[in-house]
Length: 147
Image 1 (tube, rainbow, N blue to C red):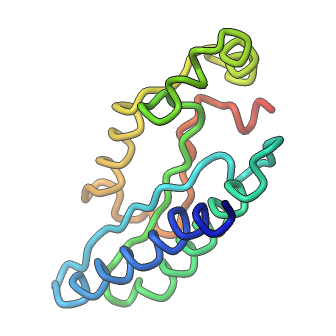
Image 2: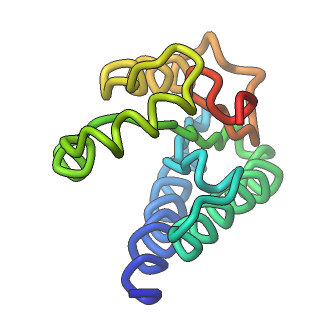
């Protein structure tokens, strides 16, 4: 399980980012790399130690790559979504007790949507976010600061 989680969440991000950066270095305007982390990388969660460690590593990787690749005009940021219902976790959120417990951790008392996370990614990929580099941006409706 450890190998599977680390291979997917950390190695996958590392190798995909390196491949993208190789192409972006050749472009005069560089580019934007947005990595998917999680609020799980910012706070502990019961039963999710390996997942949390992998996402914390992605956050550190983001900050390091931002420093290393800035001279090539490549910005690297991470998005740290909170609780968002997806195809992967839909069954988990179908458990009404789990959903109720989760919603109590979110000040807005609702799950985020994939579209809301995508809008943050779109912003970070745009020229409007030119000064943002090496950041782990939370998209969690306040659940990290509310916990």
